[in-house]
Length: 490
Image (cartoon, rainbow, N blue to C red; front, side):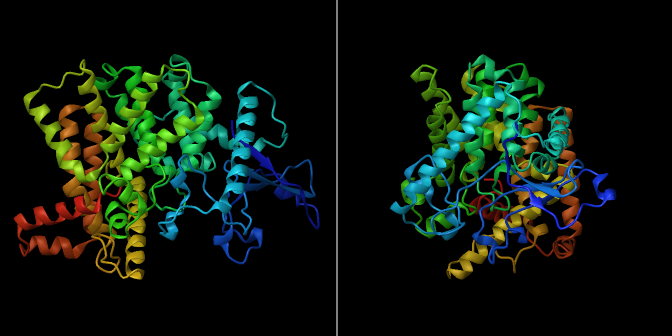
């Protein structure tokens, strides 16, 4: 059900050679492509698509825009983000604290119109109406590969980066919709499929694609990991359909509208969100409220009794707030106590909810437990985002946050500390709770990945071998630094 927008045919100076016509393919492009002829790529709306050709026409190329289409503003190509709250129109990259200007109202109305058009098109597709665009061969090839990947969506080796490319940047929409259908939640809760689709599209739009790490692909990755945990025997035998619905929605929205900087940065720059939430779980509260805004805007649960809708919103907030890394020790200690006393009763609704919180926390920081090829990419992306924040802090002459100084830290040092003091303790307790093949696989990858990063940090390994560092001090300082900074996935 890929949304497809076709631009006019571009004539060529001469026929396409026959040896080219014998092949099918596509040339992908992004907003930085010189195809658009813009002097400054930053002035372009973010778009992804492909240039395809058809052997039946040797004198034409077809430009196909897939997925997200944004609207030009009155001042140029710079897109204005939609939002579910009055204060969501702020571009965090400008780091301003002012509300959006009144001049953006017409643009918002245009965006609403496009949302309605998407709504109608999705409705037509879901009713089985034929595709109006005959040139869909390449799209079918890509969607076919994506569907094949979804058949193995429960595999821990699932490559979310490949899946995102195959779905043309719509991994969160496709994957979450598939899981909701696979669990039978759409039928069970009598959800309107058009509303579900629209809700997921708006969720995906509200993630900042310019963030190297905290973007829609990360949300899709966390949702896929959550699905793996929901299939674990202890959870699969105990969780209700309501629990599963909450778990998937929380995973998909847990970092909604993340600005690409952490809570301490928002506090020390006097950002309005820090004041709004009184410097307490600032980002997590914002993610939760943003998700609630989209639920209400799309009326996804409007057919349910009011008390049920409010219960969903409250419990969704409880799950998302659990991802606050500053409360890591609180949750971990409580989890450890339950395991020591062996008193977790999954027949109890509050205990099931707590296990869901721990599952979401694991899914949020599971990157070091993935195979090296995937884990390494995530490590590079989160460190890039850290260093970008450090560069902003330097520019604003602020104290540089821990782990954000590119001159004092490396990817390897950041990852080794994060794995040692944040990831290992959490996943060790999760393995005690759910001692399965998946848990052992995750711990195995964690050990191998940590060893791989250690080989890239000879100075750190050398100093530890010489016994120059104080073990007690090293066990406290990095831990407190990691918790103060906030985990890469928080």
